[in-house]
Image (cartoon, rainbow, N blue to C red; front, side, top):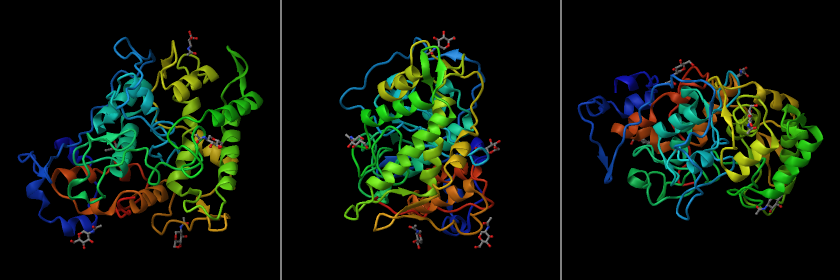
Length: 402
Ligand SMILES: *[C@@H]1O[C@H](CO)[C@@H](O)[C@H](O)[C@H]1NC(C)=O
Ligand SMILES: *[C@@H]1O[C@H](CO)[C@@H](O)[C@H](O)[C@H]1NC(C)=O
Ligand SMILES: *[C@@H]1O[C@H](CO)[C@@H](O)[C@H](O)[C@H]1NC(C)=O
Ligand SMILES: *[C@@H]1O[C@H](CO)[C@@H](O)[C@H](O)[C@H]1NC(C)=O
Ligand SMILES: *[C@@H]1O[C@H](CO)[C@@H](O)[C@H](O)[C@H]1NC(C)=O
């Protein structure tokens, strides 16, 4: 609790007005909070890791074990596309959750928690604690159950109840569900309205490898086998162009859509290829390493994490700068790409702040603005606001059951 006071954002007038009585209930002397038959679990920011040295991963205690039939896995680059942008560097903080689950850095059943995600990405990828917290918070608020502090890295799970009072519909979806964070223009997965958006798509990966063969650097495994900035730019160019066209069918009800919260991730996810996933000893992101993480969802043999805490990178901004025609927007009913209107003032001061506005307004379900007790403490942590670059916080206002 003491720890948590650090995280509380300046309460918006909505929170203050609606929850004037909450002080009594939120005190640490009353830790048991039962709502709709569920017992609340307070999310507590774990301490930052002290050992941030280079080291071989996985260690002996984390062997690869393929998931069983009931284990949750899912979604694209496996949570490293479902990240929270850090505005100062336009980067994000989230590597491959499926890999972490397959090695037991998070629960092998794919049901994880705020603290477990932060500790796992710190240990396995040397992701800075605050970045890990931003990623965990964004995913749990949009696709988890932030009352019981649980999230599925795949789809709906019997281990995660709907939100108390079913305020976000009859099921808690998990990060594989399209719409709030999961979105279009992934490098390795089809868009939801084009094909299978959950499982790795080998056709797309083969296209990526052709691009690598044209633009990659030479490395220990041969010519043009190392991912570099130009490779990432060309992969994203190809994917954005083809998905926008493929989804131009006027009969489709779900349209190609890259609102700012999605576009940030479109540019940020590939940066992990050459930052987080590169071999820490050589700095090289080889075809072998990327294939291991993305397709096999296991740590490459003889792989080392970076020797410094990852706090973002300039790569997403460089990719965005190389593709200036791709702004936040969506296909209209005629399949024509139309830019979104800018975020309203004062949330238009930066891309990071506009992203925060989009997440709170369109992705975090509105009824979370009115929750109480431990539920409220978990929702109103201030982590997303803290990373936003905005001058004032927003209450959740997104649609429900979507
Ligand atoms: C908020 O951001 C500051 C500056 O980046 C950081 O030092 C602090 O730990 C962050 N707090 C939380 C709760 O993320
Ligand atoms: C894989 O991607 C290709 C190219 O976009 C697409 O045609 C195909 O339907 C996808 N496969 C699946 C199973 O989604
Ligand atoms: C990482 O680099 C070390 C040192 O050069 C090398 O021994 C190891 O094989 C490399 N691992 C991968 C997965 O490339
Ligand atoms: C933000 O929006 C306001 C109102 O439309 C406008 O006056 C202002 O110039 C915008 N600021 C930026 C940085 O675009
Ligand atoms: C929050 O509660 C207030 C008062 O009951 C209500 O007017 C408002 O619509 C609620 N907001 C949401 C997003 O449910």
